[in-house]
Length: 385
Image (cartoon, rainbow, N blue to C red; front, side, top):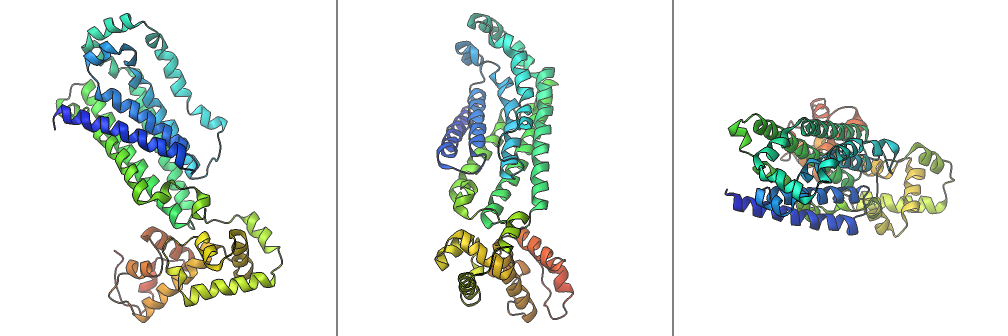
């Protein structure tokens, strides 16, 4: 790949990042969407400067020199706060989150004397371009690498803690969390490669050092992958109110609903819901949400939720998943679908991912599907794929 093609790809990545950021600013209502939009804009600036990382460019635009020393220090804090929003550890700005930007502020203060220099002073500095490039590998930028690893590791910690804590989430929530996990791991991989390239260039290790600036193709991939997911799985960027929301019901809400009297209307609605599940097998619909059920029974979200909670003593997702689990175990024991894998049977019952199926099954039965199968002599032996 020649450098001309690389520049085209990097510039295309800039445009894609701006387009995706524009969508997030104006058409997405999930928590943290604007944070992700700002991240994409900063990435676009970074990619644009890498695309033009040449002496003649900075001689013409000297005030853009070393902007890439400062902008990357925003990535970690923004992504960590974004993860906190998506995982509901923090629903609004807090003092702790503002403290995440202290390294950025300190770096801005440290570099301010250089940024305030005149164009002529900066051009004199750029004239010795080799020296200006050498300065890229000073102690301050090494500390920025440490910040990257620290913030991304913290983001992954929050994410993994959340996934372990929450088992009952809507299919759209699962889609978003799966995307977020992949996004974080890809980011961490890019950071690790970037750090390796940084030190290879610092210590003149030609093989690894020559990867610069090609390792920014990883950033391009991340941007286009996010755009692709937006097209193929728009639920990732939709608001929780549109998609039926989060599946967990708080203890306070459950207690409040349990204290309400069960009316005849509740019982009739519950009977209609039960009929949909048992006769129409509505639970087989992958990604079924509370709003989908409301549309079927022609009632509102609050009343349907109350009917399920008061009459059946369950929240919506527990209620639906129990039907799915019953169909799975019935078919497993009857060997009706003996040509299918366990995951295939679960998929036909309405589960749309292996992770959710395993988590729900273990929560309900206290064992994995494979363990359940081994404990039942009537069940044909097969493997989850």
